[in-house]
Image (tube, rainbow, N blue to C red; front, side, top):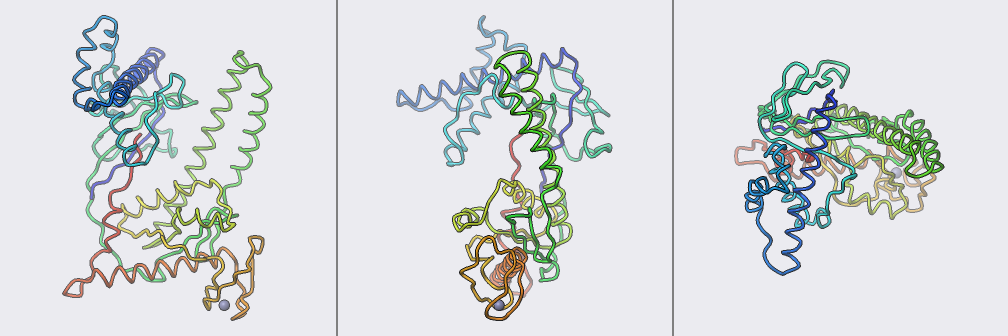
Length: 401
Ligand SMILES: [Zn+2]
């Protein structure tokens, strides 16, 4: 099994190095926009857009031209990557995953550039071709020395409100883990709760971390302050930076708590069952509040962490009224309102907690799914082979950095 992982560190760059970073990011943007314009014009004229390799071949010529000779200061890989990046953007567009590629703006959200080769890591510095050794804070994350495992396949330097970061994407071949039979005892159903972040079929409720609320209140206050300042003034810029940092901190904390949660769920169970997010769309229309609790990210983490650990993660794709079905007898309580946190089943008199009940139903549905998959994939010797779904999940989806 091939595993991709990303290791991200804060860079301690000199001001000259930061100058180079901005220059590199600017060059990437320039190349990206130029190639995009070319494709757009071709599209308008009704001719075939120039293919990626043709566009890459233009780069040396551009470097020789006087007005674009400044591209020489930038490593050629970074420029080539801009074209590949554009190619990716179109690929995603044709797969209907994103809208039509847009021009990159100078003050856009992400200033970044990548190398595909030639990056080396020493103790606490990283070698970026043509820029040189750049110091980074290795102990910054997890408050301990972080081992970088695998071969570096891509290094991305990007800018955030708090400074410049390098993200190293590595590749590693791991032995395939031995599958363990799934039973009711070693698996769990997870309800993406309306009040708590998640509720498990074992009755455990994991709340949204409290500090998150406090930070959000603070963010609102700082945003109000920003709106009172004169746009473009020195104080406005200062306040804007402050707001951006706060946003970043909140995003980091949220990501951190989601990672802890997904690690715990995968570590403690052989199989984790959840509702499908598309199904949640239906649930929302049915009156279940679906906040932006980061569920998409949580499901993504569960999927790849399960794949790495050789465990099963299944999203129940079929909509079923998990909250309204009694987990003890199967009775459907159609009149259940969102406000009712507890209810007593009219048919069997069981007292039910709304979210735990939903999680128990999801758990049961997941076990059914696994059982069905198992019977289908038993080979002639009666030996169990892995469910087909897992094969697909093995390729952990890694977001492009
Ligand atoms: Zn009942």
